[in-house]
Amino acid sequence: MPKQPVHRTVLVTGALGGIGRAVCESFADQGHSIVAHDIHQPGSEPAQGFMKELESRGAPKASYYRADLRCVEEIDAMFDGIIEDNTCIDILVNNAGIQKTAPIESFDYNTWSDILATNLTAVYRSIQRAVPGMRKGGWGRIVNISSVHGLVGSKDKAAYVAAKHGVVGLTKVISLETAGQGITVNSICPGWTDTPILEPQITGRMEKLNSSREEAVFDLVVEKQPTGKLVSPQQVAGLVEYLASDLAENITGTAVPIDGGWTCQ
Ligand SMILES: NC(=O)c1ccc[n+]([C@@H]2O[C@H](COP(=O)([O-])OP(=O)(O)OC[C@H]3O[C@@H](n4cnc5c(N)ncnc54)[C@H](O)[C@@H]3O)[C@@H](O)[C@H]2O)c1
Image 1: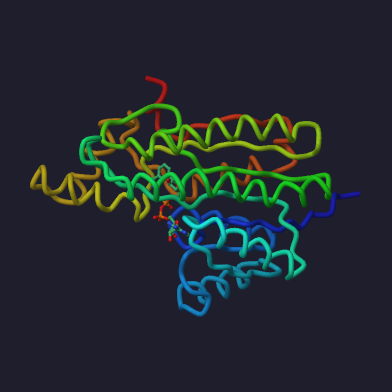
Image 2: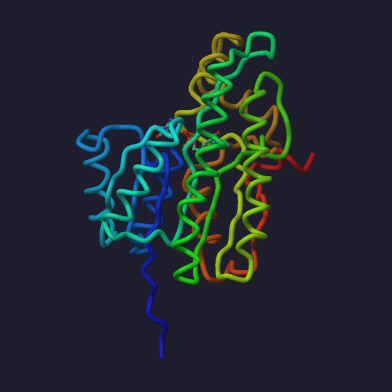
């Protein structure tokens, strides 16, 4: 007898950004329900339009929740809302993140706090809120979008590198706390990926080189990624999908690079 496809419910944070959007699309294409999160208002066109798109792609249900991840009370309110709506999260993709660069002498405290809160503390809180439901159901997948900067450093990125290394460490701990319970927890560590988060760095490189956008992108990428190619959001989404599958039940606690060879050097 052919196996019946299993329909899961996937929560993706930062769902309206580059990687988040691709992850939602990929799960919708597989017929899973999507719980999308971002900072935009629920009634806004980007949120409403994307939910319609996900349902037309094949998601049985696509719902949207707003929370500013810098605020733990807003994260809690989002999870309370999800529970009130009788939704159980099977797959949690902690994707939202921000990045700002400055040398340590001028790295201001508010920027540090915002990056740590969004990129690390929100991951801790979301895992803490999602794990009880996964334990109850005896199955769960958590995929945290860390970065190559969870494995190696780069100058002027103190807060980002600290937070992303923190995500890799948190992943290991929660994978041990959930091992043997049908739950896996992994990090993905992308290199330069073609999304809006890169814009300030591309613009900066264009100004520095007085070059075209194309030249600036290549210069930025090849400096670190021997392939010389940006990672695409769809390539990251494909890896998320694999780690969330039953085939990957023995992969837990890992930090998987998708970085064109950046971290093998
Ligand atoms: N693009 C890259 O080169 C790259 C490389 C490695 C890792 N990453 C990581 O991938 C993840 C996704 O990044 P992306 O490139 O798609 O960026 P993006 O800027 O396109 O998307 C980030 C999303 O997070 C949301 N977000 C930011 N701050 C928030 C807050 N306080 N509350 C709620 N939502 C918030 C944004 O609204 C946005 O939709 C991030 O964690 C990032 O660090 C990106």
